[in-house]
Image (cartoon, rainbow, N blue to C red; front, side, top):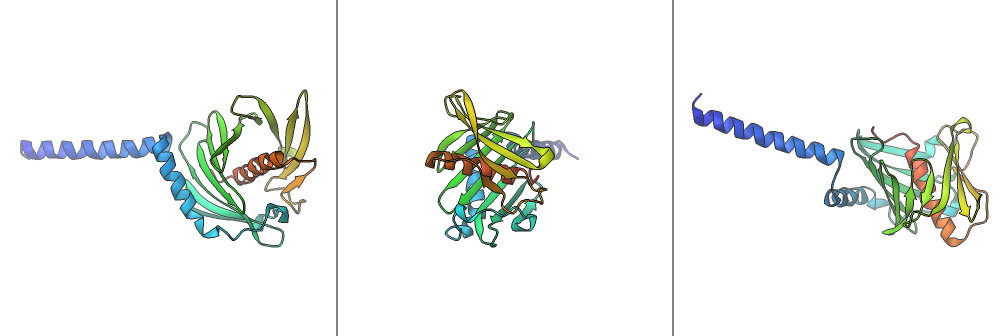
Length: 221
């Protein structure tokens, strides 16, 4: 093998190495531009559902058969949650990235709103219609853009449900119970247990939709 062939081979190996390194880095820590590209792909994946949903008030079925999942590969997939009558309430699409910890992007589409959830080691940033709702920290605390506590999600694995509480001055009030996938005693996945204002209802819908998708165990680790 002459010197030119060796140089050409080395160059090709370097190019291939750089390509695979960039692919790996994108799967570990995508930059803002790459996240926007991935989000556009997620939106496209469930665009066919747009306009075909029933209102959230129709209820979300807690039955596993009504939680349709389609995984295109280990790190991407989509699905839909149905009402107890079998009508779609919301659809979702997701992409998982390589750790550390939970590292994923989720897009949720409903009749009235769209939600984007970006999970990293800091927690899950929640946006509704491009507006920041808050950050759901790993310990379950929901804080606003100023870091103020506005709610709390408590996972009770022993009884297969999560509970969402609203922060009120020096106390908190339960707003809803969210059934986890193995809770076979529930008919509806989200049970509202407290009075809600319009804004509190939107906060609950955002948190509950992510909690339902997250607890399906779809995200690669």
